[in-house]
Length: 216
Image 1 (cartoon, rainbow, N blue to C red):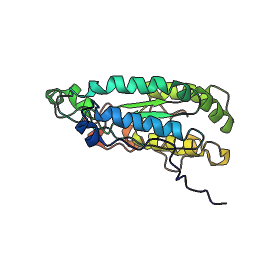
Image 2 (image 1 turned 90 degrees about the vertical axis):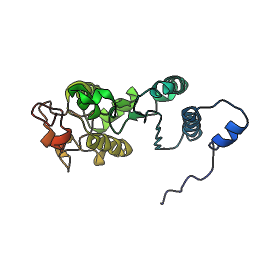
Image 3 (image 1 turned 135 degrees about the vertical axis):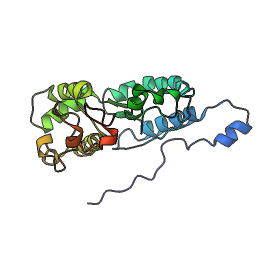
Image 4 (image 1 turned 120 degrees about the horizontal axis):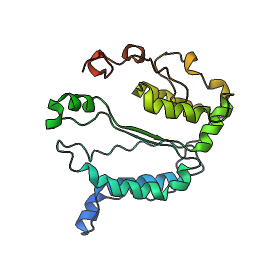
């Protein structure tokens, strides 16, 4: 039958930052947003839930505000550690690297701008279940994820393929090996990716290519 939408709130509503400021309370916007996100995750712990939180704290040229996120983010991750070890996936990513600073006048700055942050935290138990769904030896997904993070050319297309497979992982007939990927350039990160993959293979425009012979 049709799935019913979840419409019963089980978490506190987002705080009104204006009211907080008028009351004299000291609350940074990232702290408020992360606290709300944590409440949402805990409020729907038994349902399948996808949430995207966009923080613009680092969007200033001198990159001085980025460090203000550290304590809030670390504290939230510590409180969610049990979930991150069992049934919660965390993706930390940016739309681009640093730009608009003096560093971008040098080659290393140009490369930094074209290399956005990507950190993927997956429960080991989930990786084991992915191995089972793919009918592959236990540890295969973890090994591929580790190798891809160190040596493979990875793109947002691959992140999309990873999230898409994550949404379908409990339906084995919908899981594809990377060799069976219909696009050929969007590959799940927990399956082997050829280390000889080129920007052309991955559909990375020459302007943004960081490989030898690319646009840097």
